[in-house]
Length: 75
Image (cartoon, rainbow, N blue to C red; front, side, top):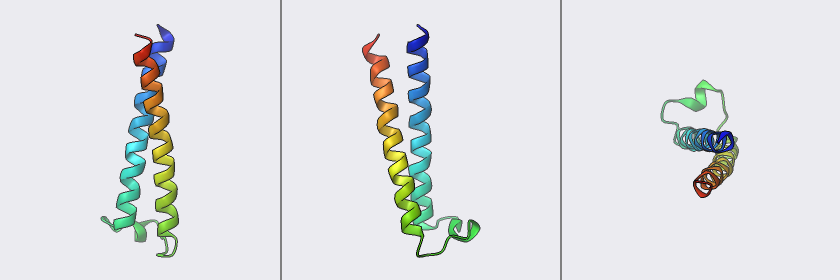
């Protein structure tokens, strides 16, 4: 019972964090709210930071979905 609850909570939290990371990568790349100037990111480094946030977001999304899949299979 505790393992199922932990897997569901952890999976949902990772999916939310990954969605926010991917959303921030999009906002950073498109400079919607003047984020590049706010964080003083040079235009040469925007692609690097966008790539890092996308990779972190995708790995976190895969991990969260696998946790939730494990939770679904134990029910």
